[in-house]
Image (cartoon, rainbow, N blue to C red; front, side, top):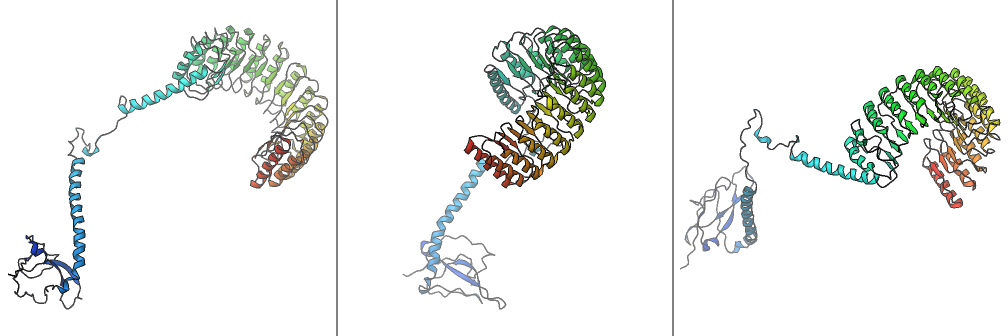
Amino acid sequence: MAFTSTLSLYSHPQVRRCRHRRLQSLPLTAAGLGKLTLLPIWRTRAASRARFGCFVVKASSSVEGTPARSTGSRRVYRRSQATAAPIAPLKRVADFVAPFGLIFAISFVVWKVVEKILYPTPKRLESSPVEGQSASQGVKWSIAAGTNLLSQLGAKIERQSKQKLNEFARELRSFPSIDMSGRNFGDEGLFFLAESLAYNQIVEEVSFAANGITAAGLKAFDGVLQSNIALKILDLSGNPVGDEGVKCLCDILVDNSGIEKLQLNSTDLGDEGAKAIAEMLKKNSSLRVIELNNNMIEYSGFSSLAGALLENNSLRNIHLNGNYGGALGANALAKALEGNKSLRELHLHGNSIGDEGVRSLMTGLSIYKGKLAILDIGNNSITAKGAVHVAEYIRKSKSILWLNLYMNDIGDEGAEKIADALKENRSITTIDLGGNNIHAVGVTSIAKVLKDNSVITTLELSYNPIGADGANALAEVLKFHGNVKTLKLGWCQIGAKGAESIADALKYNTTIETLDLRANGLRDDGALCLARSLKVVNEALTSLDLGFNEIRDDGAFAIAQALKSNEDVNVTSINIANNFLTKFGQSALSDAKDHVYEMAEKEINIFY
């Protein structure tokens, strides 16, 4: 018997809107699955346009031959076999999508289970015993003393520090001269490294400058410097050792017989430290050079050191630059010179000794029985009045080789006094009169000295407003006279006109090797004049400094062309930095450098 079984998914045949009703689950037979259809629901209201609302699954529940029911304005049409063709594609899509939907659902459920296992919901933390502390804060890191974090970090730093110190120690044992300045190893590092110096007979010079070493650290040298006789130079400058540290060091050095040069510049030592050094110098006979620059030594300290010079006959050089000796300190040293014969260098730069102090000092030096070769009294507020006493000493001295009067205020009058004394002196080879407010008149007096004096080889006149006239007076003499090898005229306001005079002198001069013309407002005109001189054969000039002169590309082109033209040029260094050159001027100078190297195999260092 032909029988068709249809099951309705609803309790009655009326079709409902699918978004307001849930599908009721009913068992479906195999035959019934073949009757499943997707039917559209149509809106029939007059105000609405016909469109699909949604699809519902419908299966007939009547026996074949039973008429289908209708519900008013909505009809449900049974799909015939002929009209089943358009539904086939939808069925194929459903058959394709259904397995993937099932796989997705199963994956989603599995993932949720795994998530619950791996990331369980945190239990509510118990309330903190501390009032106001939130339970959600969780674990807090602490870097207080004794924690694992700090101990690990400290251990790593300690390992790295030991590795570095071991490297320093191997260096101390391998080379005769070691520079360990600025390594910042401090007191503990010095205790470690001092062991390498104890019986080391290789290292002769070592610098521990600027390492944060204090008075406590200098105790590391106790027992080390007494047994080490190879070390000759010890530099502890830039360490805040203070008076206490210097006292400790002096107690150790009393019995040392190896160290010949001790550097204690910028170590915060004052009068008490100077007194300790003085007591050590009375017993130590190995030290030849002691540097105490840029400290806080005043008259009392100067007086103690002066007393030591009366008893010490081994010290050759004493450096006291940048302290506070004043006129009284200079007077104390002058009295000490009356009984000392060993001193060769005296450095008193920047002690504000003034005219009175220089008078006392020159008096002591005039009767000094030793052979002082270097005297530095620059930046001491010396005027023309004090220059008179300096001139008297110059006139009588036969040993002085190097005299520094830099940054005083002797003026033209003082320059004339110095010039008159230089006419009789035949020992000074280097004289520094820079920054003394000397004009053309004073330079003219100095220039006249060079006609007969062939001993002076270095003349420093920078920072004096000599102008073009002063440069011309100097150039006229240097054309054919003197033996000046180094001439420094930086910041002298000579301009292009003064550069022309100097350039003309270079055409004939055969002695000047180093010429400093920085910051003179030469511009391109002055550079052109000097370039013309460079084209002429000059076998003497090797270094030319033209920095800060407002030179542009035209001046650079002229200098470059001069270098290319003169195959016999001996210039090895030209400084044209801090001017107004563009890449074109720089390229021209670079090409000239390459050309000279290719043609004459000479290397020229050009700074721009």
